[in-house]
Length: 111
Image 1 (tube, rainbow, N blue to C red):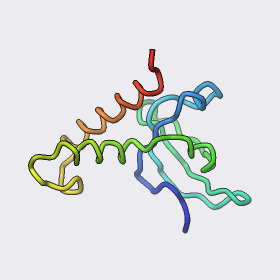
Image 2 (cartoon, helix red, strand yellow):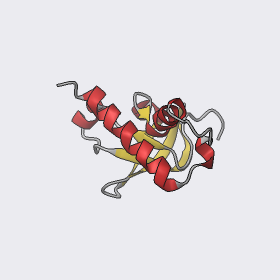
Image 3 (spheres, rainbow, N blue to C red):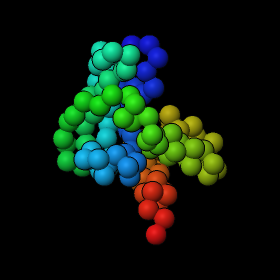
């Protein structure tokens, strides 16, 4: 499916305004790319914490920050070993994903 903004396996994070409209909070993983509905791409996503699945249109997730992209950029900015992000195993990547989620949550709730 050409032109889709997100890919299978990618983790996205809901922004605060979507949570207020009834969407589950937390991180979601794109499980499947679905056929367009009208002019919009659709995705099947699954909550990482609760395992709940739902279908969302691309416009519903367009306002979300991609956790993996932030984690990768944080890692690369602090990478003294010169090991590329793609060469890191899950334990190292999970630490950076946790940091990215923490930073996104702090940005959404600046209290």
